[in-house]
Amino acid sequence: MHLSKAISRAMRYLLYACCTAATAVCAQTYPAKPITLVVPFPPGGGSDLMGRLIADGLAPRLGQQVVVENRGGAGGSIGTGVVANAAPDGYTLVLASTSEIAINPSLYPDLKYDTLKDLTPVAMVGTTPMVVAVNPELKVADLKQLVELARSQPGKINVASAGTGTITHLSGDLFRSINKLEWVHVPYKGTAPALSDLMGNMVSVMFVPPPATLGPAAAGRIKLIAVSGDTRIPALPDVPTVSESGISNYSVNNWYGLFAPAGTPEAVLNTLSSAVADALKDKKVLDTLAKQGGEAGKLDRKQFSAYVADEVAKWGKVAKQAGVKPQ
Image 1 (spheres, rainbow, N blue to C red):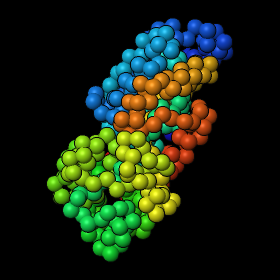
Image 2 (cartoon, rainbow, N blue to C red; image 1 turned 45 degrees about the horizontal axis):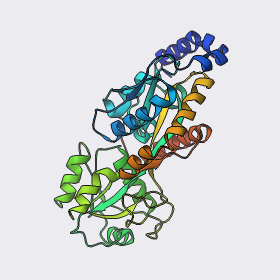
Image 3 (spheres, rainbow, N blue to C red; image 1 turned 90 degrees about the vertical axis):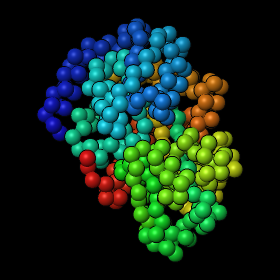
C-alpha cells in the first residue's frame, strides 16, 4: 500500500469520526445540501445515461439536487479516484461500473485508491448483458455454430473489442477460455470503430453492450446470436441467452453501481440505498433501462458488497489469463 493512500484514508476517518459517533444526528440532517454524483466518463455514453437517470430518480426522494459531474480519463479511474479520496459524508458519490471497479485494478497498478478499501458499495443500479454480434457474412446461425467454427479454424477468426482490458475484450476472452478456443483479438480505441469494422467485415465477432447493437442489427449490418446474461432482454426478445444456445458455465453482466467513500456513516448509506431502491421501482426508470437492454439492480447493499468483492477477484483472474499488461 502506498504511504499516501494510508495517510489519506486515516485523515478522512479522523476528520469524520465525529459524524460516525453521532450517526443518529447525521441521519436526521442528511442530506442538507446538494449531492455531487461523479460519472467517470464524458457525456453521452452508457455510464452518463445511467448516472443521469439515477440522479433524476434520487433528487425528489432525497429532497436535494443531485448534480452529475463528468470526470473522464484513464478508463474511468480518474473520476472514481476523486470520490475514493473525497470526504466520507455522502455528498460526493460515483456511478461506477464493472470496468472501473473490478477490471481497472489489473490495468492501472498506480491507481490512487484501493477499490475494496477506499470505496463503499451503496447500491446496484442496473445491469446489462453483453451481446455476441457477428458479421452477416460469417456462416453461423447461432452461438454453438460459432464455437464449432472456431474449433475447426483455430486462430483464424478475428474478434474485435473496444480496447485491451475493456469489458468487451475480457468478456470475449472469458468465453474463449471456457470453451478452449483459439482466435485473434483485435483491440480498437473504442466501441464505435470496432463496431464499424465489424459491419465492414474487417473482423468477424464482437462482444458488445446492447445499445450499440440495436441500430446496426435492425439495418441488417450485424447479426446478434446470443446475450451473455441469464435471461433474454426486452430490447432483444428474439436473441437467446448463451445457456439457451447450449453453452454452459458462462454468464456475464456489465453492472453499474453507486459508491461512496469508505467511512461514510451507516445511516447515510442506508438513506442512499433506500432512495435508490425506491427510484428503481419507477416505471420511467425501468422503461429507460429496458430500452438500453438492461434491467434494474436486484441486490441489496450487503449482497452488492459481496458481489463486488467476487467481481474484483473474477475479473482480475480473467485479465491475468488474457495476458493483459498493466498500463
